[in-house]
Structure formats: C-alpha cells, structure tokens
Length: 118
Image 1: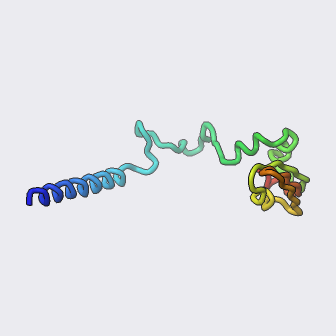
Image 2 (image 1 turned 90 degrees about the horizontal axis):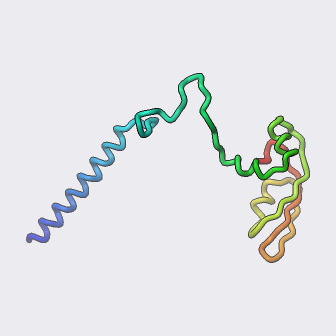
Image 3 (image 1 turned 30 degrees about the horizontal axis):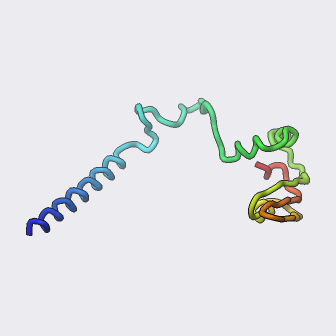
C-alpha cells in the first residue's frame, strides 16, 4: 500500500512540475530575451546584422555572379556544378539540366535565372 501511495505522490509531483513549467513559459513575452531586452530593433532602426540561409551559398558564387545577384539582374545563365551523392536536388533547380554521375560524384549542367541562384 505504501508503494502505491509513493508512486501516486511522485506522479502528482511530476504533473505539478509540468503544469508550473508550462505556465511560466506562457507568462514570458515571446519577444523577450535574457536581460529583458527585445530581440527586435526599435522602429526605424535596422538590425545590426541579418544572416540568412542563403549567405553560405552566396559566398560560394564567383564574384561576377555575386555582382549580378546584388544588382538585381534577371538574365539566364549557364551553370555547372559538381555534386557528391545524389545529384537530383541540384538538377531540380536548373532548366534544361543534364547530369553525369559516377562513383558517388556528379556533374550537373543547365541554365538558371540569376535571381534564383542563392
């Protein structure tokens, strides 16, 4: 009988702890961070730095292509890329794509609009 009472007490304590943790999490404003400062900059001010998922891809482009992307060019360009593993993901981004694969490596050739690069 004592074992059952002890198990119920532990179960009740766990339920109360989960309830308190969820209540505390909901009470904290979503924009708040440590120190009470908002993570968004004040209205009219730009953030110090913005990092996007395409930053690493942009860094891999040749300087001439980076200039075209930044200038807003809408040209279509010829692209070739080397891949490891399955080349179908790279092939899906390109128009008129051709793929050559051997031994886990691939060469993908096709065309793409400059705005779709990174």
